[in-house]
Length: 214
Image 1 (cartoon, rainbow, N blue to C red):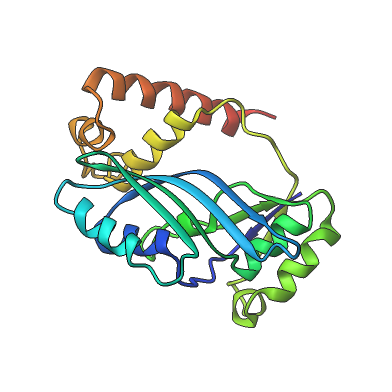
Image 2 (cartoon, rainbow, N blue to C red):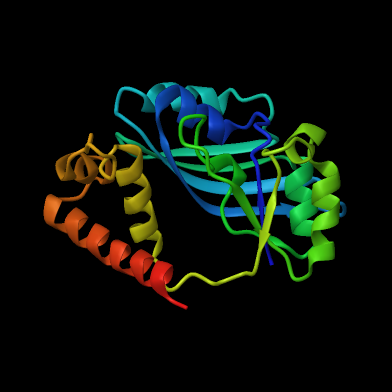
């Protein structure tokens, strides 16, 4: 089953670098570990403008929350980050219950672009600890609650295609009237226009097929 939860907006470095510097974060590893799931390991790539990268690197290296932090500059506009921090309670609950996040709650959009945090659980009862841990206003107020759906696995959308769709959406490529151009998407992804166009077309075809399937 899929549970769609509203974002609780607790502070985290991923939120900070996205909000403050407009960075794109691709999370490669995210798991809780330790006897009581008290630690969180995250490995990510951070992409931002060349002017923003030095400030992001300083912010990460000086972060007091991290128990361990390794930052490697892969290019003038990209960082590789590996960090260990105290596990946020909601993350520890998800990992400890046998559930998993379909999308990272720290990457669920901004105030202008809200998206739910999606957790897949084997049984509905497995979501009870997560529901109890949510602030009351997140699941008790009318219109602000969570949703539950039958889990349907994605049909082959690759990480690159998903990333391309996300970038295009944030840049306004799918807005009406359209605010972003294909060239803007290609520049943000650091690829040429034809590759960006192919990525988007293939991703769009899979999304449409999913939407109209029985």
